[in-house]
Amino acid sequence: MTARNPYVFIVGAARSGTTLLQRMLDAHPMIAVVNETYWLPRKPKERDGLTPDGLVTPALIAKLLEAPKFARMELDRDFLSSLVARSGPISYPAFVSTLFDRFANDRGKPLGGDKTPGYVRKMDALHRLWPQARFVHLIRDGRDVCSSFLDWTKGEQTAGQYGTWAEDPVTSAALYWRRSVLMGRQSGAALGSHHYQEIRYESLIAHPLETCANLCQFLDLAFDPSMLHFHRGRTRLDGDRSSKARWLPPTRGLRDWRSDLSPDEIGRFEVACGDLLDELGYERGPASPSREARSRVERVKERFTENAEAAGRALPAGW
Image 1 (tube, rainbow, N blue to C red):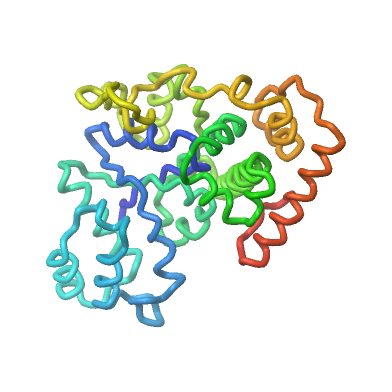
Image 2 (spheres, rainbow, N blue to C red; image 1 turned 90 degrees about the vertical axis):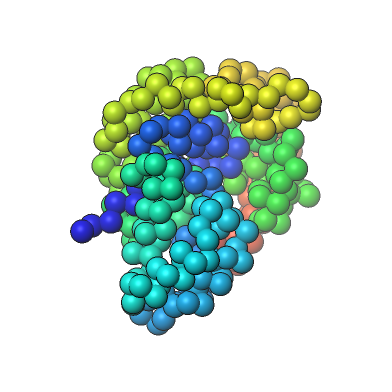
């Protein structure tokens, strides 16, 4: 029988609202969505715990149990060990499919999915491993993403991994967003409409019912109102919490690049990504970038590109 899990991957640039979408979809009675695995495409590439022809060995179990994110699936060592022993030689894709089956079944659901933002740049590899899986790419105005990065304790860790954050965090965040969105869209175009759908964060916030109904149609699921009520009993407004920690429902105005960013910052972002903003239908800001700003962005982009290529990180066509 053809595996059906993992059924869907929710992907997108960090700070695009993927956690909100994951919580909404996870509230559906038919599907359970784990919050960020990160290890799925790494293990076949590393080959650690796999035979040369890609079969799972007991050594992989120990590696998975050591992975910090793996604990989120809440699968114990006895189940993992018995799976390998009981099944005999099992391929890595089949093994992972069984893990997602168990993850979903433990929650009384038939389907299991995953939300890992960074998989937006790994969709080709994931599709090769699980050709039945579908991908939902959440896209948010990059200037709001940038604003969030500047306030985020992990902003430098994420967008700064290309070595340009200290020189210019705004342009670094812009180029990170550009790379993620372009790679996701290019992979999605190759996958086709049966396997790939884009959702705008702004639509999810402004029209959650219609957006969730369209998502369910893409996933061949009947829409369920529970998706809109995922936050009930969990929302916390006390203390100094992030919007994510507060478990807010879809809420307008959490970010507004027009007031969050200075005219110079908006200008630099738009020098780096203005063509992509236009392609996605986002309005430009009123600022006119200075010659100095343009020169700065080009310098940062050149260094960003050199560091990405030196680290073996793929860049999208038309970069």
